[in-house]
Image (tube, rainbow, N blue to C red; front, side, top):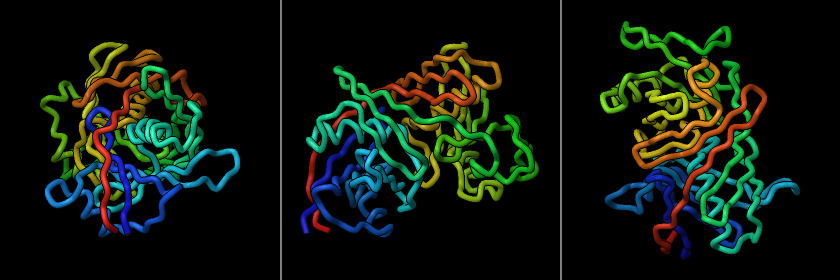
Length: 276
């Protein structure tokens, strides 16, 4: 069977996007890992599936699989690519698109310049919601790594995030420490790890080690989590520009109970076909 797909990226965070509204296919974890291979497959950080919704008030269902084949709850850069994809493929004519994810519902708005504004929903801080093994909610958790204590914040943007302050992201131990924290026993579903450098109250730099992928050039939910962490600790203003290795995102958050708003680009790379 021939399956059509599109390769896309959001600030270098790259995706294989598949329309399962007009096509049918079953991709198991072994097949996803093979497709994600950058030498023998297509190569991507995440596979995004566009499916029919299960609720009448939603336009689509949005599913995300990491390069290791694991399904995850949310992906902010992927959400922007998802919005551009369904418009480009004429699966909808609407520029405000409501989608279901495993981490909650999202509202995607495509501007005339092609940038996408995403209502990411309200962040969650309760340990059970992250999930994190902790008795009480905090913004300063102590994590033991080989006898060394690491201070971190933790929260959910529909998926779990740890945020660590660093003096410089250029010298942060992203791959080594990120890998250790991702699989730490206190995070029962693993965790995305953000290394946050605060430049000013309106600008930060960020590198993210994503669970099931490793370090990526950008992470939309990671950018949201980092800004939320900085705002709730009184270190950042409500509107922050986030510089990631792949480019910049704009993040807005008015405080507890409010949604996080993310705005950024989404680009098509190429279209292709594979036999499945």
